[in-house]
Image 1: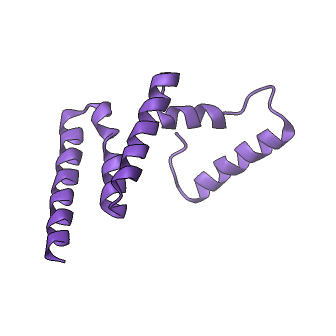
Image 2: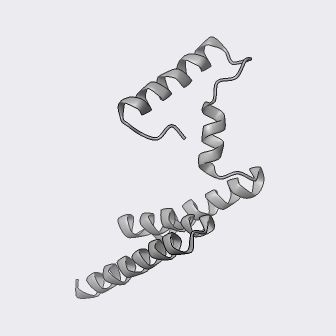
Length: 104
């Protein structure tokens, strides 16, 4: 039990250090490490953290855009969208407004 607490404390220190590094450095690439670090701290699962980081990097490498940029592009209404696609995109936009989430 004591060993598990030490691991959690070290993990928290690493996470806080990574966050400060990202904020003070101003480099967006370092922010990509925060998601996997959070996944590791919250779940304790190294594989899940690695998968999160790996999938983000793969999407970035294949598309040249971050995951959030891709989602923004997908949710932007287009002329040739079907009525169903337009309805879904508008519902997502309305829900984000109600939850007061940034519309990216």
